[in-house]
Length: 226
Image 1: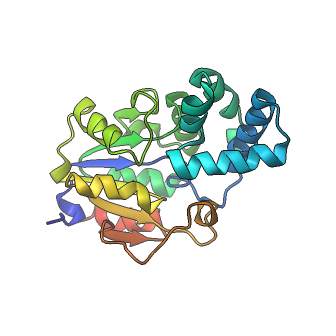
Image 2 (image 1 turned 90 degrees about the horizontal axis):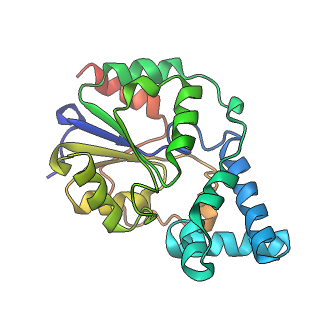
C-alpha cells in the first residue's frame, strides 16, 4: 500500500532533468562532454562515440558504468571532465524553493552524477538549504540507478524507511526499484524528454509509478499545505 504524500517523512529527489526542466540547456552540455570524452579516450569519431554512449546508457544505467566495466575507464577522470559545465544557464527557482520549504520531512538528493555537480546545481537553483544529504554515484560505489543494489545502499546510508519515503524521478524505469522496496513514487513526465527515444520509455506498464506530474513545483505546492 502506497502512502498519500502528506504522510511522507523523507523526500528523495533525483537531480538532473527533475529539479530543473529537461528542456533546459544544462544536461545537453554534459551529453556533449560525454561524447568528447569517449571519442578522445577510445580514439573514435564523435558519431561512433555517441552511439556507444547511448548504448551503454541503455544497457548499464549510465554511460560511465559501461566505460568502467568494458574499458576499465577511471571514474574520477570521467566525472571531472563531463561535469565541467556552465550552470549559469539555469535560473533560480524561488517557487520551488518555497514549495520545498513548505514540505514536512527530510529531503535528500539521489543522483547518478557527482556530489560536486549536485551542489553546483542546487546552489544555482537556490535550493541547497533544503537537502540534508546527497547520495551520489561515488556513495553508490559507482553502481547506478536503476540497479537495485544502490537503492538499498542509499536507504541504509541515510537511515531512510522506504515505507514512509517518496522518490521523485524524471525517468520512470528508475522508480521501479524504489517501488519494489516500498517507496511511494512520483514520475515527473515532460514532453520531448531527451531520454524518451534513447530508453524507449514504455508507458504500457506504469504499475511502479504511484503519482505522475508534468509540473513538479505545482505538485509540491499542492502537498505543502496538507
